[in-house]
Length: 95
Image 1 (cartoon, helix red, strand yellow):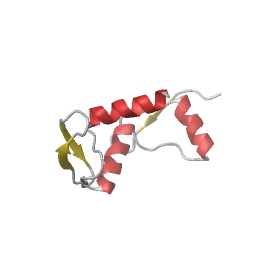
Image 2 (cartoon, helix red, strand yellow):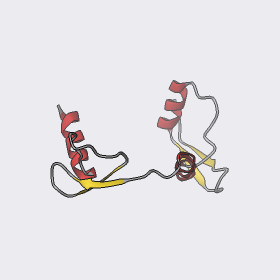
Image 3 (spheres, rainbow, N blue to C red):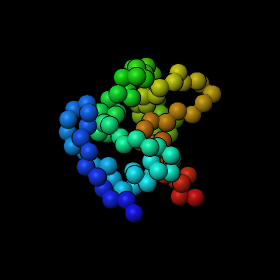
Image 4 (cartoon, rainbow, N blue to C red):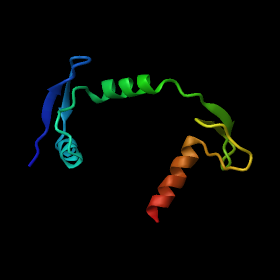
């Protein structure tokens, strides 16, 4: 039903592919307009609007390595580094 389409980013002028899967997602969500920006420009725009996040450095509760997190760690809560968090998430989805 949907076919990949090549669009031009209004921000950087580069061509990008609006995949069939993305088109289907847009249709499911009721979006009527085509994307105007490539993924890279959308991400940059999103990050600029959000602003810089302060990262806190702490110790991972599992491996003892350095963990950088976007929240102030509490003593009574487990804090995981990115790698341990990904492993935990992977194990939870496997169940």
